[in-house]
Length: 167
Image (cartoon, rainbow, N blue to C red; front, top):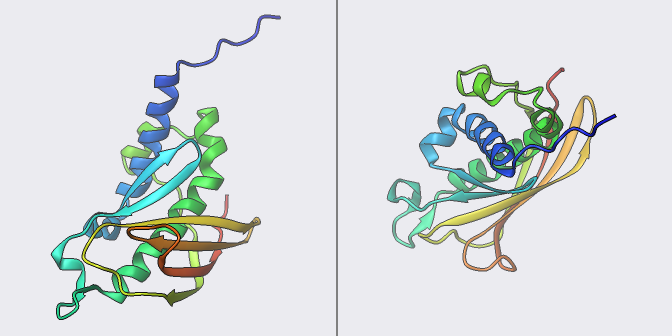
């Protein structure tokens, strides 16, 4: 029996990027904040490009706490969604073309979300990564960390629990 020939790497990258773009682009608030995601294999890094509209305290100036929390929560939701959609994306079961047409999978719903503000967010780009610590059929736990200039100096971190969408 002949082995199936592997797909060209460009096709695989295009499918992954299209799926991620559709997942992120399908949420208006993510687009409003300008949050983007960089993908390296199955690992995602969220990027919040600085804009003046994100400033909460113009005297410091500092990023608005609500923007920081939304950035952390968005990073957690998209990373969690990416982790459970990965197999369907890789197998081709989840077609990026249907995603870009608006047929998006249901996203996890937040049960609780706790933010620790560690330092003021400066008027510059911010980055975040999430780690799924538990993912079951009904419930998932995620830890998220955001930083600006140096990853070892986080500006905020969060712990979140999500209700998983039904298959």
